[in-house]
Image (cartoon, rainbow, N blue to C red; front, side, top):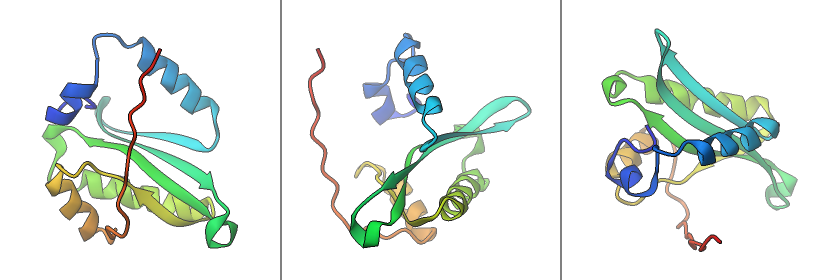
Length: 134
């Protein structure tokens, strides 16, 4: 699902699973991270990653970062994405977070509308710096 659209297709390399497996092991070993998978009859149909981040701002509040939200094409428009995000918000609340944040590519205008319908507000401008790897 990570490579299942034009943006993902250009940056993901599903032919070599070794970096994905190594990343999974690092994420799975850290209790601040949670990988969530939705399945239907044994088939993966949705994913997201929830990370709890401590911070000094907002009175030392915990915040949750939502990443890698994906829903299989066959499941879109059926409420799965909403269920995943609402679950993530409640899980963040249960873990003591006072804020849930996420980023989405500017090209994903449908995703922007989706997140806004769920109450997310585009309150900040996100910036990224891509680093060369050795």
